[in-house]
Image (cartoon, rainbow, N blue to C red):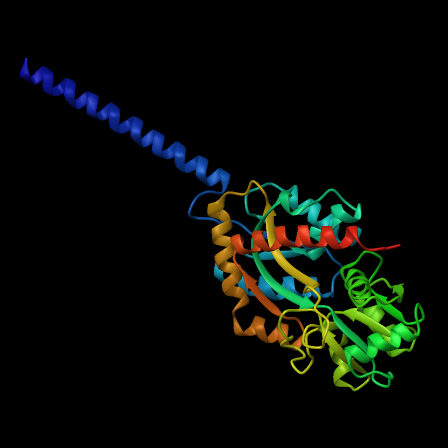
Length: 332
């Protein structure tokens, strides 16, 4: 009788152990398939750059990917998806499978599309990974312009209402909004001239086709170094590391909110937090590598790092901020 009880008990224990092993195996498989396992990533990652090859967003994405893939142990392939002021690539990224294997290099226009009526895409449709870059609008004029300060520029424009031409990177672009915001805050009237991009606007400035531009320091740095242009002020809370001798608008006498472009990494909104944490750690560490910081400095691009949660707050604030600005501006 005792022997039978022992045999029966051994059988029960064996069955329990088998069931537990099967459950453990099923859970492991489920985690792996969903991307939640600690072994993420298990394959290469695609990084969408919603811009043409060779631009600032594309260059930043490729330089960052080169460092991040060393930390993740998997290749990161950068794919360009231009069009719709970036909305095509960012929409594709937002609608990708939420497993962490498709990351998108988003930029400031993500917080503006809905306000401009260009796309229904908003920050609510993505999950932030990390902010990498911020570049303020830099009011830049020809080196021989008859004004050397922001105050002198504003005074000149007031004496010549509607005559001063300010080039931008396209109607409704961040640099157009920067110029329109300056116009409103300084109570001046300018002639907005759109171009296909910031580089083209800067070229037009040097060629004498426009009187000023409100693009990033990166777009004017080469001409500034060559002595062909001068930057009067930057729209940021702090001076730009790229052009540290140039005052902020507030320092120059006009208190305007910071306006500029930024670039950050995002994934689809349903991506598991565990996966986001892995990506966040890798990309933030990659952004601090000497090779990346040197590349950004040489390219005239600023570095500003924010964690996933900080980036979420930053984007939400941008969404509200640009919504208020755009509603009060005449962007026609």
